Amino acid sequence: MSVTRYRTQKVGDVDVFYRETGPIDAPVILLLHGFPTSSHMFRDLMPELADRYRLIAPDLPGFGQTKAPGRGAFTYSFEALADIIGGFVDAIGLHRYALYIFDYGAPTGLRLAMKHPERVTAIITQNGNAYVEGLSTAWGPWQTYWREPTPAHREATRTSLSDEAIRFQYENGAPAGLVSPDGSMLDMFYMHRPGAEEIQLDLILSYRTNVALYPDFQSYLRTHRPPVLAVWGKNDVFFLPPGAEAYRRDVPDAEIHLLDTGHFALETHHREIAAYIRDFLGRKLAT
Image 1 (cartoon, rainbow, N blue to C red):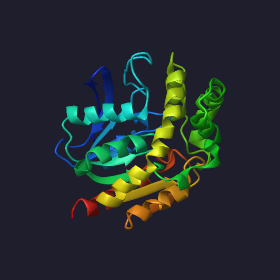
Image 2: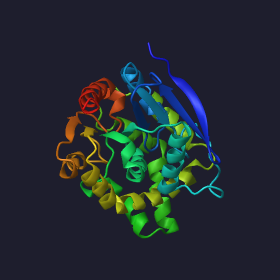
Image 3: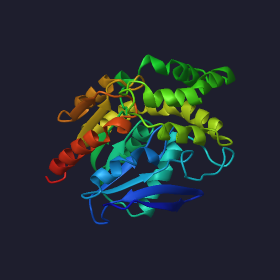
Image 4: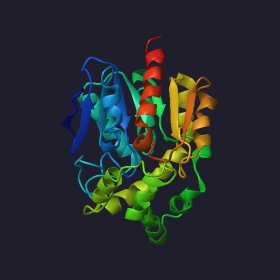
């Protein structure tokens, strides 16, 4: 049985909380969560792979148990998230790793990959988008806010932070009765902390920088050709299956698997995803 360890690493003014399991000398998988969750989303996946891999899952600044300064003292942007996670990777001495990118973890992780392509052994993208084809019409209010960041448009995106919206992300498109309420309840708790909503609204505005970087992300993929595995909840109403298929445009031998579930595919399909990862990395890291 694997043992999961819960630790904190200082990176500047940020105390990065992370969970880790697996042999210290095993190949590393760095798991980057998305909105509005935390490393808790990997709680079921990590033990499935811990016999063969060292798995490390940090909480991004503004999420989970990571402690960062308030908005006046820290800029909540995706560039800043990537800088902190890059500092975290350096601080704990990671020199080679596969990236598991989901939702907000995709633009964060792809920034790391562009900066240090020599470190990335593979990319596992689970509803982690890098193509305009993957964006659904559900992004409409956010895109309006990106184009015109007025107070009214900022306020219109606040509905994405409600308890109902968080519950919807977990349950929509997933097999009925198979999604535990634990994850969504924890995320709701985090969202109700003082100042949390304003931090998230800042990140919603900053998300426009990710879309602007899509051509750069794609250039990285095309140039460096990391092995890519896409395991995608095909019923996700935010990141559509064409976003998974598009990876083949830049990495022609990318392996794509569409699962009959929603945005938080690990809630219902962690064993299937673990099996795909085990097979994929077993072949790709052996060459």
